[in-house]
Image (cartoon, rainbow, N blue to C red; front, side):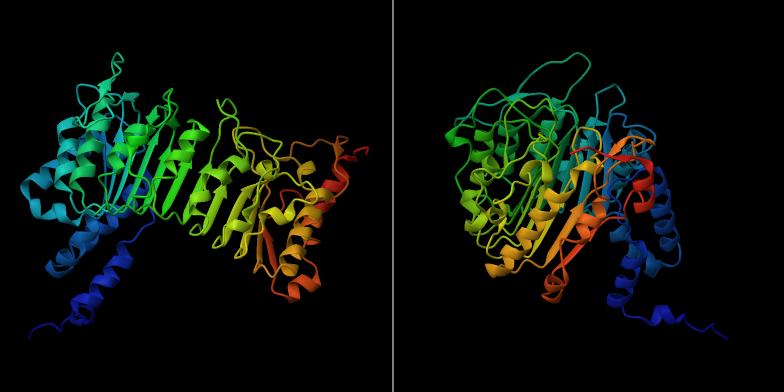
Length: 448
């Protein structure tokens, strides 16, 4: 007598594939050791159940691939040169598996005799169905010939390093991965040439999201023929640790045709250029009719101002996230943040590249600023209904030390009164880092 067929095997392929996708899904940003073991342990177990499971689960096993050129340390076993070699052999023996890759993450480290450069380079031509490409590594400064001659890089030679290979890989990948929708390029040494990046981005015609970390200043301004203005399909641009000039930011923002999301974060204190919110807003003016979401960090200063800022022309802006250190809390400037379609405002007190914020940073002036912002929004019929505060002061206080007049979270609670709550306005913040009782007992009130 034949054993009964398992109920799950009676499920159609389309539904079973969705079940397996949920079982194998794991929100991994990088394959560090614990995540790696957990994810692939589950995947291998599913693959061994039966031929049908293997057939349906195979695409998910090769969907997200992480490899390395050079040693990246023991915490990333999936990206070790040895693992990269095994993966290369698998793709060589069974080319049909290449089509399943959708997310490719490549680490470039200092070159050595064991770095699998050829194997990594092959992936740029094999994994043509990749939609999300992430590059982490070090880069040499690259000089470009901005004319009709073919692609060229004049490498700056550094003893023991060969970061030109990073650019070679990017160059090849952008010309072969026709389905690229999202690209993330991150450097740890701050030597990411904006010229070089743009020259490659021009070849990815379906790009929607671009993230760049560590763009450096090359000593000159982007040439007028670096790209065709308003030609890129990019709708989301995320810049972190941007060390280039305000003028090059302005020119970069002329590249996308219709930008909907922009973020500008993680500044270092030793930056070369003076930045303020008005400079960023001015550079974004070509997208004032399309921008929906804007995030700006502290800009490297602790004395922000809204001088010269007017977001009322950004007619479709719905989500605004700003650092307190970029805005300040000067009375009378609140309305300058009110874009006509604004629905959510986030205010962060996080101090980039410095020690944590203090209890003094959110007191009566900040409370009044937010309260005025909300009331003005109601009066001007701006649909602002959601406020969020990021405020995580470290507890450096000792018994007897000066403390501000009020427990900061009492100030926050007073921002949105009953009248505003009845209109649907909400305010959220994280768990207080100190109780009101401990706050009042620990220090003495600072003198005015």
